[in-house]
Length: 535
Image (cartoon, rainbow, N blue to C red):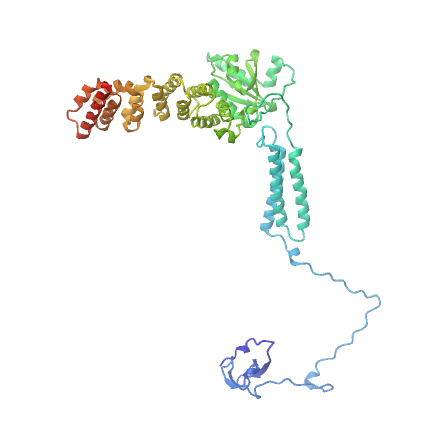
């Protein structure tokens, strides 16, 4: 048998030192193996653990000398230390956690926290000014934003530090965090007081600062505005025999509203799309407006939504003090809650917005609302939108008009005019909401155009074509001889819904050679027409 305790005997159990009689290898075994046969792990020799194989330690008694111990000298005598001897003072070894270097991951994590706090501070210094990225955020939002960034950045810094430096990093994080939270109060924008009413319930208007500047002479205005681009454009237009351009001096306009202002001006005045804005000092712009067939007074009236206008006729420039409050959308909770008293008023104001995306959202909200108040004002504004070329959501406008329009006529005429202009496009497919509005208004002038749509796709347009009523009978009868297959089936159904006795001979003649399904449709149409004639 192999003895298990030979490799690593326990120090706590009594053991015997034995020697293999075959290979003289020594082992330690437990005393419980005395008298038992074991096998040597070195040479595989089997032997019994008896006194012959058990090794005994030699006992040395006091005063006894052994020859093999002579080589070991006695302990030397230690001399007494000198009188001025000073023992060395050893300090305790530092904890391993305090001595460990910062890992690359922790270093990156702490750097991110520090950089986040620095960037936030820069945002408050440069990013929250007038016209900048974060312009318009309320003071509570700024404070919460600063506190959140201070907390996150400080936590990352402290967590990345080792134990030895953690207190110092914590103090530094607190110092930077307090400074960051103080920035919203130090960089707070000035409040301009005014007695003007708010633009709408629940909307805080951005007030205009009264100009204390003295009235400038034409020469001073030319130098102040920098009218060289306007003069160059006028020279070009004069050589081409065209109407001179108009200069728009846009003042106090927030940079974030520049493109919206430009789009509104081009859309409202129908100016040449190449009309360009030239930046000037003090955040002002000169916009050279060409291709506008209107006087300075008429242009100023068109752009009255932008703010206060002053006409400098001697230099052909209109000065506009931009009211940046018109670019602020009303509270979304009130704009979407039909039960809120401010719902209709706010959405009516949104229809006048200089930003078409806000107008489009207001149109959808009003199309889904019951026309209770401001019905005439909203209807008139929707008709104006239907006439604007830059609007691309005609379907939604027609949907809203079908809900809000009360007096037949104006809405249908505007939709018919827009349909004629859409017809000139290569892919003439008007919005279904537009055709539905024309059918509701019973505008018969568009029936030939709707007839073309019906001939091209009878399945899609048959229901809307039928909504025009008896007025389509002549159009269907005119096209009936050229119809075949599913188109003739559709024409027969239309005559059955809207036709008069005039259609009976045509339907009777169509019976000859008709298939079984068409014959049934003709019979049903004739019966429907005769029933209406009797009534």
